[in-house]
Length: 191
Ligand SMILES: Nc1ncnc2c1ncn2[C@@H]1O[C@H](COP(=O)(O)OP(=O)(O)OP(=O)(O)O)[C@@H](O)[C@H]1O
Ligand SMILES: [Mg+2]
Image (cartoon, rainbow, N blue to C red; front, side, top):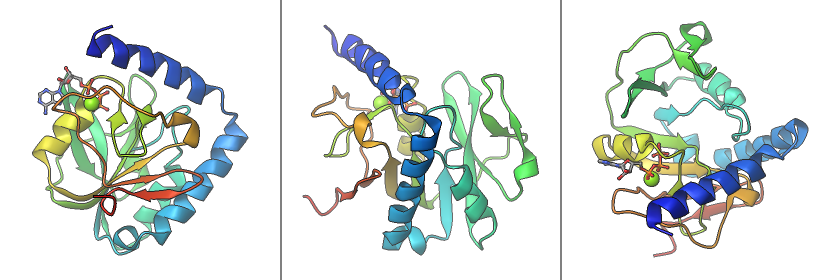
């Protein structure tokens, strides 16, 4: 199998695995992930945060987004504006969101927030305990990270999304911290 075929295969397997988690279990695990996030100093002191808005079986972030809106910090959320481009749009009110054609809650406007960000909360299909990440295969996050400065890149995932190894390319951006329902893995301390 080529590297791209390996990635594709793993996406199918891991998406399927994640989709089997019940909604109630997902909610409980997501709550535990929030708890761990708030234990991270960089997270609890962050003044600017980029955070994805969860969809289907992803680690839920709606509660987080709600918390952020009530706080005195600059929040931005992703919006796909072209086939290969994602931007970070400032968000201060939930009513500024509407479902896109996939049903993912997305900002109505196309204003792009200015980097840098203290924190980015990143979704993914698969992760390794060394910080590699596999997304949905469009390279949106990899490209966005290559163009925007983020102090601490945090991936959130359920343990079942962790694998021993992931096929990676030069353009794959790895994480600084990975948080699951069981642990905080600080990858900056490992090297
Ligand atoms: N910084 C970049 N510049 C140009 N092409 C890139 C960049 N990052 C990724 N790509 C390309 O985008 C395509 C998809 O990348 P990849 O398979 O890593 O997606 P992914 O990590 O699963 O998706 P995402 O980043 O949206 O979560 C690949 O062909 C990859 O080479
Ligand atoms: Mg990638």
